[in-house]
Length: 515
Image (cartoon, rainbow, N blue to C red; front, side, top):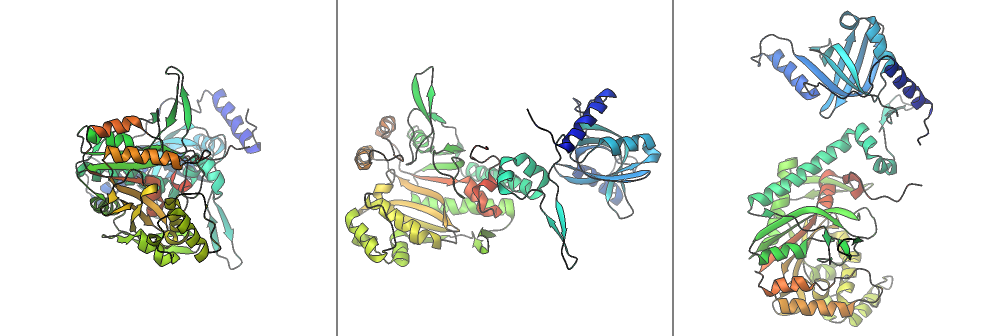
């Protein structure tokens, strides 16, 4: 059971008093006729003479959370906030009588939800205000919301501190965070608009939105540790998906030529500023396209989102305190071959070291402070070089292309280069934004790669890409050449809304259990 502090005890007493007077502090019905924005717009229309409605009064019934209240004898001014903004309420003895004003001042606390009916007007200062004729309680708040605090400095400057600044509390109590921090509400409205714009772009370009299983008998499409559960009726273990890829490509076999899905993926991995075990992914697959065509689609799609939601392709992103980047998503994005990028940043030409053993020796000779794992494949050593030396330099939107075959088991090889595949990753602000391939559609090559991977895995390796026999069966029916793409919607939202942590763009991020 909850333990209530002294302020909460006072509010609980008020709830008892309301009920004793026959007033329900949580009534079943609300009768709102206008939002705050609609009421202000209606008043403006009357003031400018742009309305054809009879009369000049704007009658409105508003509802919202009480955010401020100031009693002045026979008058009381208050502000309420709804989903569209704040609006002032004016309680006057002429309309309500002294008893009702005293009732409001005594029984209503900041945070309560109130319904107020009356007539819109402007005060002497010109503020749009509802002159209240009647009001009622909609929901009594037992716990006070965190309040903003003003600090007066020695020079007389007043600094307003956010109502709720502790990031841990904000993430655990997102409901309170949203209630008191309007910029947080704005972030999630923009996130919804970003997702809508992604859908619109793909729909307008002939893609079909589909749904693939979240519970899968065999996970695949990436090398990641899955979450495992058990289906009692089927008497078998099931996995939460780590990717949509293998199911979406099965649809290409079925002649659905352009397909996409926006949904949740689940990976049983660590948490960081750019990782959450549950995240939103966009994947699409396009028949008769290659990774060059997918590059064009990607930069045009992200550009469309920038234009539609923000009206600009230039953004400021503060990755760390004091480290601010000016990002420009104007097309075309920079193209950089991985081999060249690693050579420029690490001084190692990976083409000169065709085996894991020779590449490992080159790394430790060139960079004695480096600590690569000596027991991994050549591709993973290249991935180590990418993360240590090249990735932090990729600030402006960049397509890094042509990856090692052994860390890209689902991509087509480059003609004439069996160790390299047609794959790119999109980078911005020093981290990966998206990943794409010219997809492998040779079932015999795919099967051999699955087999080779199984022999490369160590017994204790957790991030494995399992062999999917049903996927191979689908490929054997014939899969058209195609280009595939995956992007974290959370990461795109981070960059475009200037939030340095993925927790800031997830309503309910994964957190350690609260003790």
